[in-house]
Length: 137
Image (cartoon, rainbow, N blue to C red; front, side):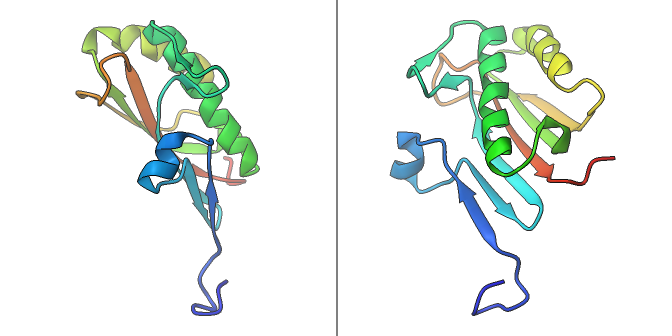
């Protein structure tokens, strides 16, 4: 609750430390109540400042990036209820979905996948997700 809105849930912001977040004023994720909204996430490795070349490696790193912000919010992949995927190349679909399927075994969130021109031609996959923390079925 906030003083201006006594019944409003607290809004918490999470960051990856990315320069983009500071430069463009957005958060890696925002949590309102038990709803965590995770911004578009790529396979960029923030620890090494690198981006793998393959769709599979980028998807694996993307999942690790999402797991990190989920952990900061007290959640896990099991809390994900909605995924939106943006593939730079439709030809990568099977490769990306193989990694995705292994990560989300038994979780089965709602999912939408589209082919989209991403802002950097080296990025092969981007996903944004919604999680409901501690609302596991």
